[in-house]
Each structure stands twice: as C-alpha cells, then as structure tokens.
Length: 190
Image (cartoon, rainbow, N blue to C red):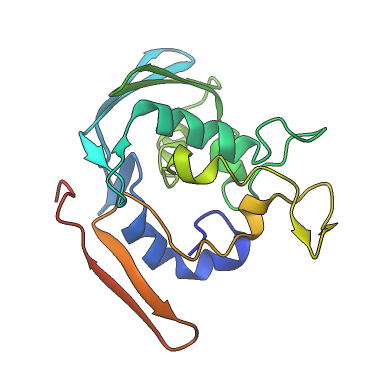
C-alpha cells in the first residue's frame, strides 16, 4: 500500500485508485485530474490550480500537500539526513521539479528545469501524498533499533497499512495474501 516504495510498483493499479495525480493520460491526451488546470507561466515555472478535495480521513487536501509531495519525493528525509534520500520509484519525475510553493490553498507553483511539455506532464503524474500522514516518516529506517543504511527512510520501507489518499476508492481493510476491501470515495470529484 506504499505508493513510493519500489517493491510495491506492481500494485500500481491500487495506488492509482487510492492516490490522485495532478494529471492523467487518457488515450494519449493529458487530462487535468486533481488539477483543474495548469499552465506554464515562465520558462521554468508551472502554476497548478487544484480541485476542492479531501483526504480519505476527512482532512482537506491543499496546495501545501502538493508542495510537500514534490519536496518529499526529492528527499524523503526532508533534510534530517546528511544527504537527500529521494524515492527511487519517482526519482526521474520528481527531479524535474526543483521547487514547490503553495501560493494559496488551491494554487501551487512548481519550479521546473527548462524542459519540454512532455517532461513537465510526466512530472505532474506522481501520486499526491498527505503531508499530515507522511511527514512523520522521515527518519532513518530501523529494524529492532538498528538503522538499515544512510539511504533508507521509514517512508521508503513503511508498509503503509492504513493508506490515506484522495482517489476515487478508499481502503477499508485487508487480510495478508488473501483479500483487500475498498469502497467508493463519496467525496471524490468523479
């Protein structure tokens, strides 16, 4: 259920339904998803307008969450370790976004490299994470009190047993290797 852990990438269908992205690709077309609109406002700046949305736990989803997501994907330690610890799964996409700033609750400004539209669209397709859930997972990962290594944070190895997203379905419960139960998210814009 961890959308950023490399070992869970085969469960992309579940994470795509649990976690919204700013845009999605449908039949080759770029479709605003969690974003209502996005535009390039300079050679190295993209401004994204967000839908009114909530997390599955009822907390409001804001531009601060989007800004947090991009900073977090670039460094899952959020500066608590000597060197940044990017998420391996989205390293290429998140590295395009050099900065993220919440302008207001519904607008985020992304500083991007001077890249073409296709690269920007790829960067807009990361799962948006709730800061109030993931900001507690920035410390070095440990097992029985021993650190894994200097390049692994709790975020990267957390099983995320009770995932909180904003997507069209929400997690209810699971029995390991047996079943998973989801329900429709009645608050989703779909």
